[in-house]
Each structure stands twice: as C-alpha cells, then as structure tokens.
Image 1 (cartoon, rainbow, N blue to C red):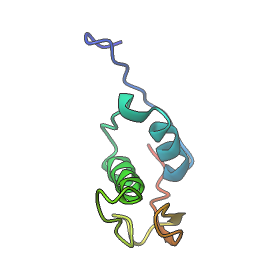
Image 2 (cartoon, rainbow, N blue to C red):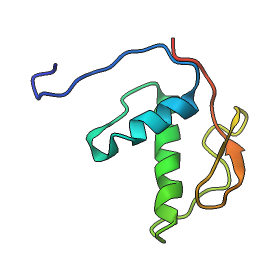
Image 3 (spheres, helix red, strand yellow):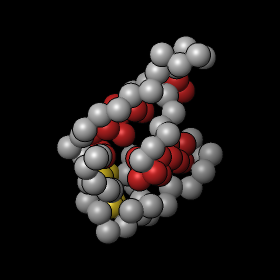
Image 4 (cartoon, rainbow, N blue to C red):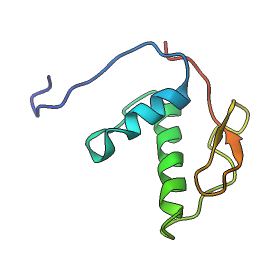
Length: 87
C-alpha cells in the first residue's frame, strides 16, 4: 500500500474492454494511471455514461478509432475500443 492508503495494481490482461469495466465497477474510488490507452478508454466510457444525463456529449467514436469495438451506452452503437494487451 502507498503512504496515502491507496494501492497500485499491475497485471497482464486480455483486453481493454473487460479491464475498463472492472475499473468502472470501483466508481469514484478508482483512478487509472497507465497505460494511457486505458485512461482514455475509461474517460470515454464515463463521458458516454454522463451523456445519458445531459451533462456531456458522447462522441461517436472512442479515442482509439482503429482498434476493436464496444457499445456506447448513449447511442447503443458499436464504437472503436482498443484491444491492446498490457505488457
């Protein structure tokens, strides 16, 4: 554990979609530090979720337009998502 009580987790994963969902399940208590692709994926998914409440607009594509797909909760459209494996 860190001095502030937080924990830094390092892992090998099979894809960003599952990891982003796991991170989001922790709600406001989680913050992704790296890889940047996961940071952007979580931010994009949060933006789509907020758009359901009229707070922000959900872009029609994720920050990773050429990498896999996921369903945006706002539009129900298949949108790009990065399937990069963490190293």
